[in-house]
Length: 203
Image (cartoon, rainbow, N blue to C red; front, side, top):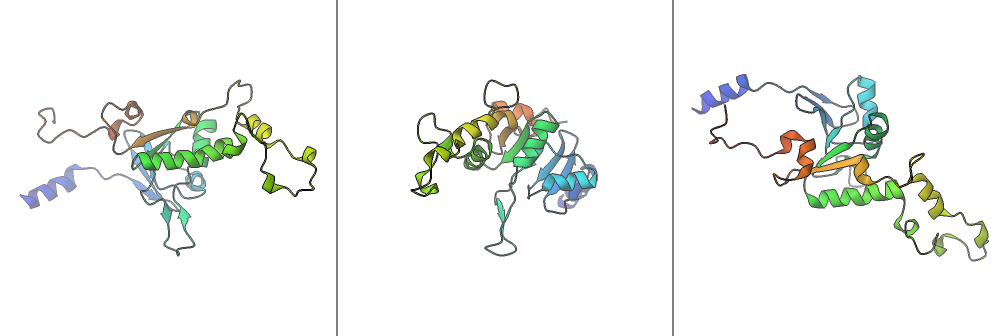
């Protein structure tokens, strides 16, 4: 029976086309949602463009987000999702979907992206200093210090917009450990729990 199962599996399950990208990561072409990429190394969208393949909308973030194969002090970030997110939002006019392992991974990536989008928390507070005292010498003219909070606030708005853009405008998170009724699953059809082999609806 095992031999029959192996033969059936290899003959009836179609091979999925994959591309190993030069800078790292693997691009997978699917019929459900188009291209999905496993791993997001730095400058990864340049690989897709140079190869003439579609820049993905869906990215799987590895559980180990840093590759340390070159040494403990030479880690490569495999979750460099900022530029893929910007490309999808500003060029493709769509949200980028990050498929993560669990809620902790989503929380961590949200913290990182928050500083990328809006700047340090010090400059996002409605009340408080516009700069850190330690960043300037005691005899530095306080009137000459740039208003960082005002500058960053300007860049947190799109041209002509009244409100700051939100993180969820750019990124959609989907977790492997989702509940079946999670709204995010509507954007990622095959993240839904698979049918049981005992289900009578299976053809």
